[in-house]
Image 1: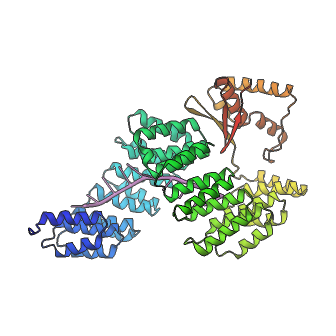
Image 2: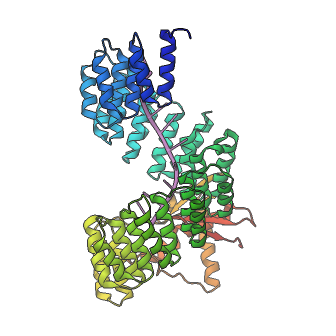
Image 3: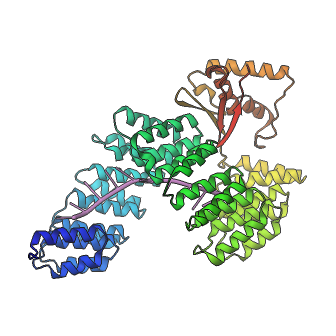
Length: 535
DNA sequence: CTAGGGTTAG
């Protein structure tokens, strides 16, 4: 056996570190005769990646010589492990910094959610490398600062695929769905190949808009790039087919993919649950157990909602109990919220309230919201008032609880309270979510909101079609029923908003554009409606 | 030897 030389030591050390076999790497490192900066830095960053920061720091302090890379590796180690102050201390005293050092520090702030510090550092940077800009955009996107992300995006002369996916993700996360689509189109138009993050974001957009045709094209593009071999991308694909209502296709993609991870199982379970297919969801849950895959917290959310939507109180209780007793998952607020929903829907409103009172975690807005929904369903004004009070403490600027409460008063005959509530809602500027509808036509999404039809470039012909529709409906004896519109607008306004109701606009547009005989699929705040063409 | 980006949920 020839004696090991310096090169073979270095190579072996690198191999152990890459494989995560740190203790073996450490042993080899100790017996290495001349440890140079490169070997020391490699060992140091190995410890950092394993979260063994103390050992990394010992090594760092022990180094006879350090270069910019060793300093940066230590800073990055602190950054990634949430020790921002220590990272910053080193950053301040290091003899010279390069782009990577700046970016490592920046990423620490972003990952810790300290967007102001990140922004300050970003502005202080002598140059703005692509990696730093991309990270900054992601940070802005996570904090809802789409404009800031866009400003960075537009100022970059050099963009890579990560730049594009960061912008698309920022749009997608903040529900700028149309912008996400057009940015994705722009990206391909400029010859930038899609990457995993951008494809996943765009599938999420397709899911939210329920635009099946677009989703199918993304699927085809995925096949061309072999992205259909990737668990994460395929989970997003399955969710897309589910949210677009194509459960068969979702199931086919799901069955073909091996090996499935827990997220993929969850996608299918929650997908069936959302469509009210309780048996199917429980069937997949059962298959999952047989396959030896351990459920996680989201799996339980999926099966419990499946039980809830299909009234399986007994099964739901059993599953919840087995989660508490047999599984490694501790039930959190989200699981209690499923149970409150399960009991509440089944009419066991008092029992649901008892559960809230006795549970080991703090009740959040979602839990009280679930209880409130149950009260509405079963006309329980007393508990509804209690839930509304709690909700308003937790989310004071939301109109939801007031609106629900006014509905409950109306349905229980408490007209005066109902009217008081309505006046209260209109007297304050509360967040009322406005309805919108859209239609997929000619590879584009055409979005309509109730008021501003004039914003559409083809509003003239749409208005004509709406009038024609009105006429046809009148002839067939249909009169507008405003009962499902929010009760906080006056009659005249109500009729007006109904006539130019977003869904009607979208239908009118579809009638104008979609070829005869083809179905017109109008999507409306996550609900899909099919309109068969007959005009 | 040091920097960025990903899936499932109520």
